[in-house]
Image (cartoon, rainbow, N blue to C red; front, side, top):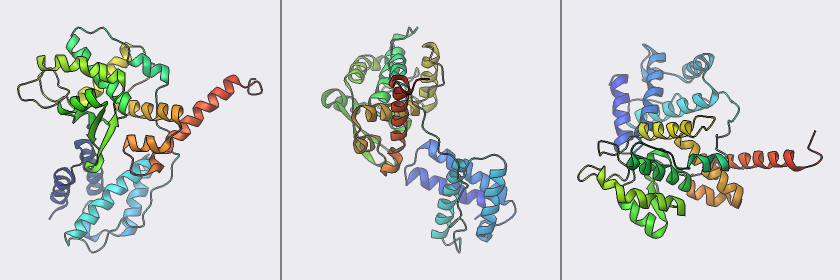
Length: 297
């Protein structure tokens, strides 16, 4: 099997059997394309550990960060493990190879005031689209959903949201979880529920639909959110994951309950959630600098 065919077969398995999101599969494709390009004429089965280390060093020399290289190595490692399972590889050449360390960047979150400002009513030419967008953004911020989780919601999610104040989503690796839906999000969803049928195509199951009546794409959700932020004069680019970060940061600031935030975000490890404690400390540091007499200069 040539490298391109092996990659295509592996990506198909990731999408169909492991149920990874299209965005994740696209990232894997890009990272594996780098491997094929940099390996050139060397057969994949002949690659050794020292060659993988050299490839990583070459990519690092081109400006890729340690974080990006860690993701690329993870993709390569998984691919070689898959090749090994299909008896096409004697050993995984990525085992023991580590990416260079880089400073850990804190996730970018909105302040509470910025989040409230983002969710203010906006004048739109189409009131149906305005109601839909408000419901989407309220749900993002209310429940800390990933973009793929929100876009995949079907109409049956409305009943549990409006009646029980919660919604079931399918997260990474097809892991289901229940997340709370706040009062403001419920209000916005109720408004959208009364208008959805005027836009949705016949027999379309998606909760959020576009002008053509079909399920709203990830890109369109991203574009609508960025456009809303611009209209409201927010000073930076706003994307769906920023609302997820804002949700986690603001809940942690108010409650201090790291385990609850981990559960709501669907993190497998609490180490992933602990980054928000650093955001919380930044908030406390700002309060200290502003309020403490000895902090003022």
